[in-house]
Amino acid sequence: MKIQLKKGVLEMCVLSVLARGDSYAYEIVSTLSSTMGISEGTIYPLMRRLEAEQFVSTYLSQSSNGPARKYYSLTESGRLALRQMQREWQEFVGDVEQVIQQGIAK
Image (tube, rainbow, N blue to C red; front, side, top):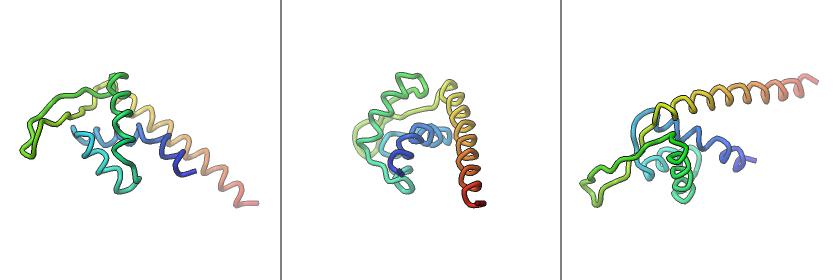
């Protein structure tokens, strides 16, 4: 069940990380893997989709540790999508909590 939940909220989590500031894919993975246990292989297809949906934009920045890094930046469209996702998430969590509480009360 946890794997399916993770897949369902990963997009919202990535957008939430980017709402804090621009980041590159490995850094996003590092941030999320500390709590969600995701891998790099999971993030790249998602980042391409978010870019295609125009929720993120990209730019290259020189790195002192090697080649230039591709940074992702949240667009205004991405911010709006994130707010909508957060509202839907809160509503969903409330609905699930209500069902759980009704089961406990019996």
